[in-house]
Each structure stands twice: as C-alpha cells, then as structure tokens.
Image (cartoon, rainbow, N blue to C red; front, side):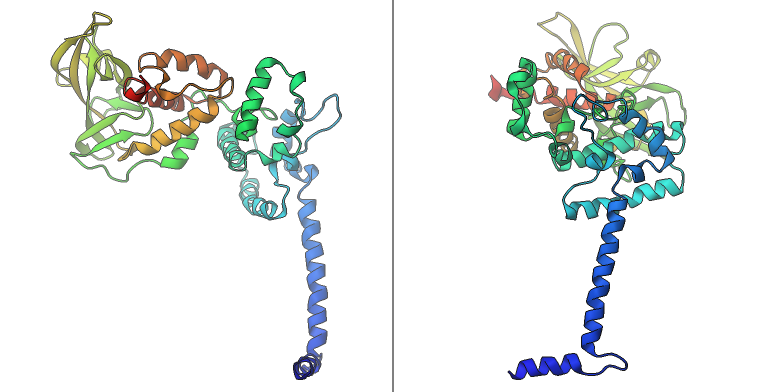
Length: 392
C-alpha cells in the first residue's frame, strides 16, 4: 500500500499553479488532439485531389492515367494516385510521406513544371518508382490484383503460362507491366540509370598499369585532346591503362579481329562474336593504333582471325576495378525482364555465338536501354555453354 500512497502523493504534489496529475491529464489530452490533427493532415495529403493540385502532376501523369483501364473500365472500379504510390500499411505509409519531401523540393524549384522538363526527368522518376515497386513485390498492385483470385480458365493459354509462373515466384507486377498507367520513358538512348545508381561513375583515379572494366559503352578518341571520335568501347570490356593525361587515359584492348576489310571490330576471343570495341575505319588504318600478332583460321567459317592489341584513348569515367557488380546487375535484369513471355533459358543453354540472335529476338518485348541490352547480351555470352562446360 505504501507504493500506492507514494504515487498518490506525487500526483497530488502541487506544482507552481497545477498539480502533476493535472499536468499529466492535460498532456494526454493534448496528445490526442495532436494525433488527431496529424492523422487528419496525413489523410488530407493522401487524396488524388491533393496529388493533382500540383500543375506538373495534373498536366502530365494524371492525363495519361485518364487514358488507361485503371481510370475507366466496364466494372467502374478505378485506381487513384495514392492507391498505387502510397503504401497502405501505416509504418511504410509514414516512410513514404517522408520520402515525398523530395517532391516538395521539386515543386518549390519548378523541377518538372514544363512538358520539356518533365520528359527530361521522366526516366529518372519512373526508375525510382519501379525500384520501389520491385522492393515490395508490387504490394500496391496486389491490394487489388491477387494471384489466388485469378480465373485461369478465362485467360488465353499464353497468359495462363505467364501468370502462373509469376504466381509461383510471387513476382513483382512491374517486371512485366511497366507503362500500365503512365507513358513509358524513352529508353532507347538512355544510359542505364539503374545500373549507374548501383555502380556510380567508376573509380576516382585510374592508375597506369592497372586493369579496369567499362561500366558503360564509351567513346574512343585518337589522342588526349581531340573530340573526334575514333570508335566505341563496349560495356564490360577489360582494358589496361597505359598512360593518363587529365581526364583521358590511353588504354590497351586485347582481343581478336576477323581479317576482313579494315578489321575495325575487336572481339573478346578467337572465333567468338563477343564485342569489345569497334574502331572507325580511319582509326583501324592509322599507324600505331593496332598491333597484330598470330593468325588462326576458324574451322567453322573458314575466316582468318588475328590476335591484336589496340592502343587508343578514352575518358577515365565509368571504369571499374571489379566486373562482378556488372554481372550481378545483368543477371538480375535477365531474370526479371526476360521472363515476360516465357521461362527464360539458362545462361549455359546456348553457346556464345548463338546467344546474340536469341537475345535480340527477346528484347523486342521488353523496355531496355541500349547499354543494358549490350551488358545483358555480353553476360549471357560470357556465361554460355562455350565457357560453362557443365552444360554439355
């Protein structure tokens, strides 16, 4: 009983004007008022009317949504902005609201307030949303669309095959359904934004004598000063630094070329159509650029090949010391993007020279920028049955 008496004395002990009990009750009531006000504000900012009150959202994304089945359909059920872009469970909803401070910044500084600015940022914004959807396996989509509730007998055979595999993997919906509510960004000339977000711009300072791997397709130059391009250095190509001047490096590219024409294309190895670099005709014929070594005839085609080394210049950005991050990204991209129509073949299912034709047939059905296309194709070729003998 003594401890109860002590609590009572504490609560009834006079403060300057109020008892501690009165202060506690007042604090409790103020907490309720604050919490109610906070939730009211939270819900007010979680409406479509609030989302499109910003002109840049109303003029582009909302108009695009109005043209889709998510806005108008035979069932009369429609998705609003928060349905897709704000998590439904409370904890993740609060985190998403904190992330939205980035949007407030964009609104204040007119980041996307014109159609031209919006299109310039569309890929960046879309990539950020796709990554968020992938992170939670498209939980927002699955609030309405559930694999367990799908009527398989009302689908086409192809759709059943695709969707049942997706259900087995609990696959993220945006792996296959990008662009379902908004216009897709132009990916053809993009520079692998999701890859660069992971690997950055490469090492801060390259060292002479060290070897590196290219994180993007890069231009080649005749020397350390000119802007005249001498060709293209392919993504995921191994190079050796021979000399550094400012932000340019003279690199050595080892490989093979077909002894035909100017011999402009350098391949990864003898008889394998794995691209390392393509030189311009002038660069291929310029003295000192290409050194030639032994020759071999390909028994499959009868063509003669030469082992070569090309010494040429490129910028020092997007060079990595480790190839594995590129392969990890390529493997992940292949396993998601290329499962749209069917179960994708294992990397070692084809040999290195068969993969390009097979892969080019696949990418017509996916939204993939040119650098990512080149990286995934190279990943498949270098992990093909040509190198993985266990597949034989």
